[in-house]
Length: 139
Ligand code: THU
Image (cartoon, rainbow, N blue to C red; front, side, top):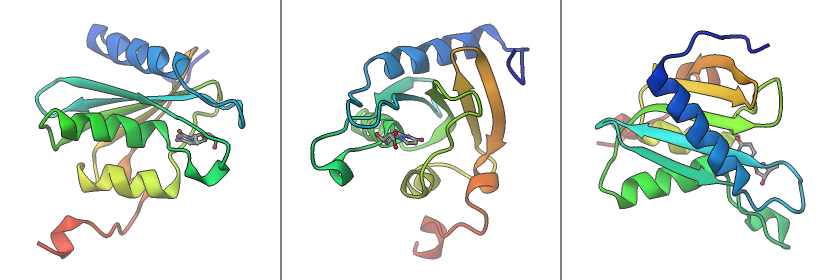
């Protein structure tokens, strides 16, 4: 049973997109597939999966791929990000991905951790990256 069982029709689509992305993960070394789905400010969806390689640290995370796809499409604001793993605790983004999300999001941007059973945790970015250093420090 998911922690949060009430989801909207739009959110069901986002979660399904994240699960489809996870199904494409290339994770033969960790066996830990992850999918990410970014909903951009204009409502477009951008998905990514983790892609590993034989030189272990050189792989990239699902969130990184989804953000890169969003930026390539000309979008630079994350409305919400969904992260899908098989983990029923909900996989939290790594430190580097928290910073990458921060670049295009706000402290209160929803970060929604899912498993195939549904939403496991609803967080906001500041839960994961308090006192974040963001672009406003430099611009
Ligand atoms: N991974 C992600 O893609 N996103 C996360 O949020 C956590 C970890 C990937 C990196 C690596 O391919 C595998 O999961 C195990 O660490």
